Amino acid sequence: MTAPADAGAAAPLRIALVGMPGSGKSTVGRHLARRLRLPFADLDQLLEQQLGTSIRQHFETHGEQDFRDREAALLADLARAGGPLVLSTGGGAVLREANRQALRAGFDPVIYLRASADEIFRRIRHDRSRPLLQVSDPLDQLRQLHRVRDPLYREVAHHAVEARRPSVQRLVQLVVAQLELSGRCPALADNEPPAEDPGTAQPPLVRLLRIHGKVQGVGFRQSTVEVAQGLGLRGWVRNRRDGSVEVLASGAEIDVQALITWAHGGPPAARVERVEVQPALLQAGDALPGFEQRQTL
Ligand SMILES: Nc1ncnc2c1ncn2[C@@H]1O[C@H](COP(=O)(O)OP(=O)(O)OP(=O)(O)O)[C@@H](O)[C@H]1O
Ligand SMILES: O=C(O)C1=C[C@@H](O)[C@@H](O)[C@H](O)C1
Ligand SMILES: [Mg+2]
Image (cartoon, rainbow, N blue to C red; front, side, top):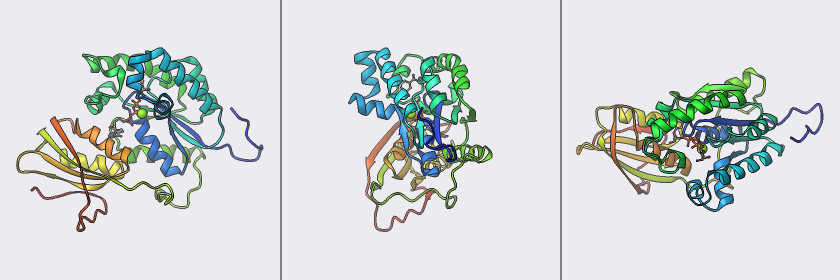
């Protein structure tokens, strides 16, 4: 790791998030970086850019070991680089001893987003992008991964945050509170998330979702509002008389995609059979100050 420029200057804040696949590292990391006005990097996304293909595809064509070698090399580079950063790691980044050392040497704090295998399964059981979970019994696989990895996440982390229940926004607040307690929180002008830089801001992505299955009478609308608000999305959710749930979501692409992934599982009592997703345009009367529940149509 680069030595601090001068002894008097505060070391740059370099936060790394570790945890099980699906524990929320990418989602929480991005929001945390935005909240703290720090640069953000996602190890998996950087690797996919480097590979020019998806991680799942790379596992299939080159095998897991090749992926782990590339992951280790990139993590070592990021750990050596100076400068403020929030880094979301991949779920298996802690497996190698050298990676754990790099995390400890290059980041402070390393934060473990702790969640049980069962909770993670509920969140990501419809996800097809995580190669290690494309097995006949993904829940059992998650439990085995958890048994092996939980001690490694604990070993490498300075703090753990219970990531099972709280919303993304709440988790960000918890991490910020921990940083404040340890005197490591950068002084921000206010408590609001920063406005998007107009030079880099993307137009919002707008998607209309229709969710079919056992989705009414199970708290779907309330949960959608909580998840969408946690992701900072604008839009609405309503029941349709045909028994489906309809959602309009507008926001950053990663956040809209996160809501779509979540909608494939929904709240615990739901049984989602199908999610239709369509591009949508905002109508002139569609003022969307936040995310709300609307009347059944
Ligand atoms: N606190 C939360 N509450 C509800 N849903 C969440 C929460 N955190 C993450 N999610 C949802 O869980 C799913 C997995 O989250 P995410 O992709 O951020 O996990 P990850 O830890 O980065 O996984 P991986 O190790 O595979 O990269 C996403 O659909 C995300 O929207
Ligand atoms: O848990 C894991 O081992 C992985 C998690 C993802 O973040 C990716 O890094 C990859 O799919 C491997
Ligand atoms: Mg991730």
